[in-house]
Image 1: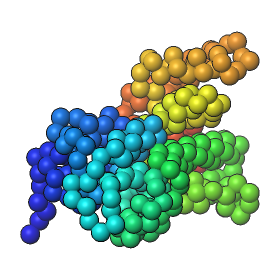
Image 2 (image 1 turned 180 degrees about the vertical axis):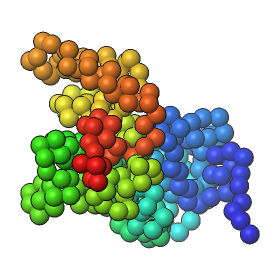
Image 3 (image 1 turned 45 degrees about the vertical axis):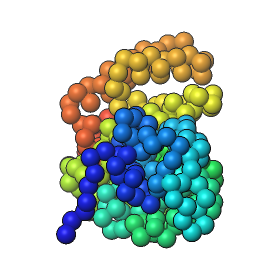
Length: 305
């Protein structure tokens, strides 16, 4: 029978009681909500009682849109809903978890709205975690992905060093997973081809979470850190190892270094900048982010090590 479609976001809003969006970036979300024929183009009257945005975007945008929704009134009051509410509910787990229905939703907004939406979210995922007020779901997501990126860099660096010093990656992985170095990047998403089956490294880094998407999330974390003047050196380093997409990114990095480092020499950083740029030019930005093991650390496949 299929699913009915509408020509504009506003048309979707006029036909929906609950509306879920999942878009690539903050600009896309702002356009869908506030742009021409956007969801909020009906003035201060809204048909949907519940709006859920599962995009990975900056917390400030989530809070801005939530504030706009909170100023609206419902076109038709139903049940106990007096006014429309919005939740930011980004997900963790990627394509594999989405296909398996095992996503984790990190939810920001009012707790009452979260409880009302919980059964709907659990129909699409396995876990829901209430993170606090508006924007906190987005905060949780960018912090989660920051930790994941830094963890992958650490594991990749250690495994590549081990290979260079004469120990196999599989042996070192067994040690990690039986000791204090154990983490998701070592026991569930190992970056070394030939060590683990069913992960992107086992299929030439295809599928999984593209490096350019990780770079986007690290950029969100870096920008958020700058806004609150939080020292996050690993955020900036992880971002620039993953992907540098413009000269302005380079300038941002060096300004950060100038504020937060006692070093007066940027030679190593310049070499790093050009190396990472070359990786992107080689077309690796679409490969899974664990490809940093091969393309930055020059790690080898297990059968070649």
